[in-house]
Image (cartoon, one colour):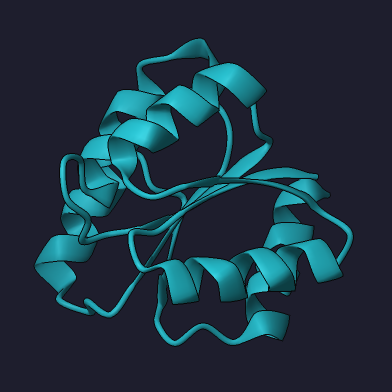
Length: 119
């Protein structure tokens, strides 16, 4: 599966990328939502995992913009964040997020979620 991983924290992005590549996925990276939108256009991923709090374009704004584009209209978008506030989760759902995972992520849980989306 082609997956776009977006996170402004390089160490977490590296861990996410290593987990996904270790499971056999093709992974593209972005450091913020703006870069993520460019990668979405360039690579047409089959799923996106995005941090919530990032400079320039946060995960909710990224999701909203991605859903307006053909490359992002029907793919799973998982928000991966330290935030657990129900109001923020509601904003994510309204923007079009498919799922919400709280950091630190559990690799088997994340990979299982991606497997369900691929089925």
